[in-house]
Length: 204
Image (cartoon, rainbow, N blue to C red):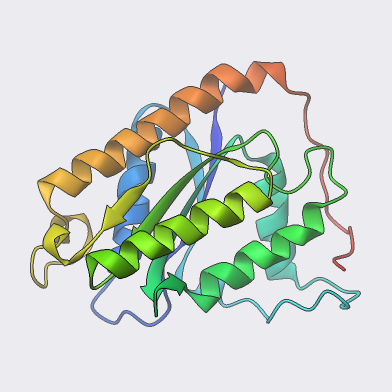
């Protein structure tokens, strides 16, 4: 039985390639993929969503696709760069849209294990971002994985792109996170009922 995972995070506008946040997200996801998970990524331009408006009656197609994916997910990975000690606006906006799942059979992030990754130019900001992500996941009824990963300046290798720009130590932590999420979801998945499609459900 295939485990389906959704990976959300990163930033827009990294001309040299994937941002450090996206690289960390993909590194963790790759460990789950190596074990057979199917992963759908919402990174880069896919995070360029309209500002969340709870009064909106029509959901943009880009938002519908993300919510459909999260509704069907067995596990979720979320990575955010540290913006002034907190979650980036892009990632927080995407998480705000999960309000559209409040009437789902598994509301918000219910019954999903969620891996959280905080990335920053300093250890303090990255740790604060990780803490904020975990608190938001709790508020959305998800189960934050016991392991949360902080990626600070000491975890990067100069200007190298992608996973090559991450230290062996943090790559090991990220791979452990992806593996733990996969194993939890694999064990938990048979216990839950199939999730119906949510296409067409209004946000608000």
